[in-house]
Length: 73
Image (cartoon, rainbow, N blue to C red; front, side, top):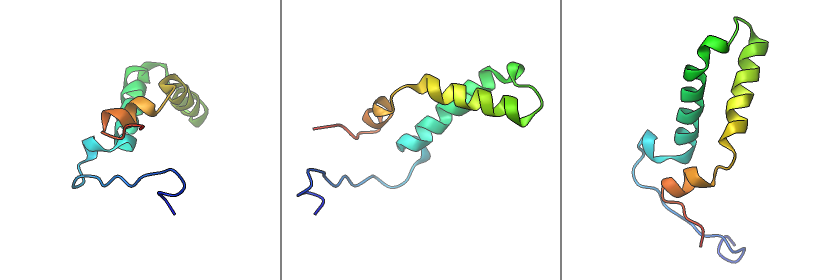
């Protein structure tokens, strides 16, 4: 069913956090927050704002998948 729907199965190497796209995205978000921590006020609203701002700045997730070996065909 997967192949018939035009998708493919890609098996990952043994798990290493640096190899997965989601870990790469989390690292980017964490770095963004660390750089902007001086702007985050001591409340949940400010933290939510800067977290969403960091996610918005990511733009596309395609480069994260490409970097980890998941290329479109």
